[in-house]
Length: 74
Image 1 (cartoon, rainbow, N blue to C red):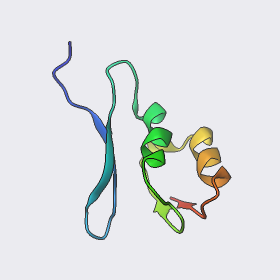
Image 2 (cartoon, helix red, strand yellow):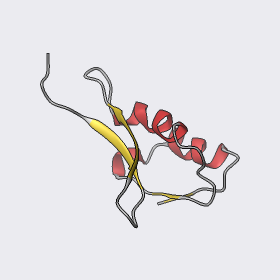
Image 3 (cartoon, rainbow, N blue to C red):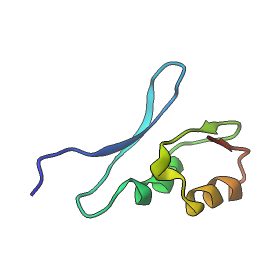
C-alpha cells in the first residue's frame, strides 16, 4: 500500500482557486482522470484549458473540441 497522495486538480489561474480535484489511484494515472475531472466542472464555455505535456493526448483534444463548449486548449 502506497502512502503517497497523488491528485489531479483544476484551478483558476488568476486567483489560484482550486475548482475541483480527483485522487489519482495507485493503479491508474492522470491521463485517465483528465476527462472525469473536467466533467465535474459546471461550465467550461469560454475557458482556456492548460495542462502539462502528459495531457497532449488525442483523446483529450477530441473531448475538448467535441464538447458543446467553446474551449481553447494550450
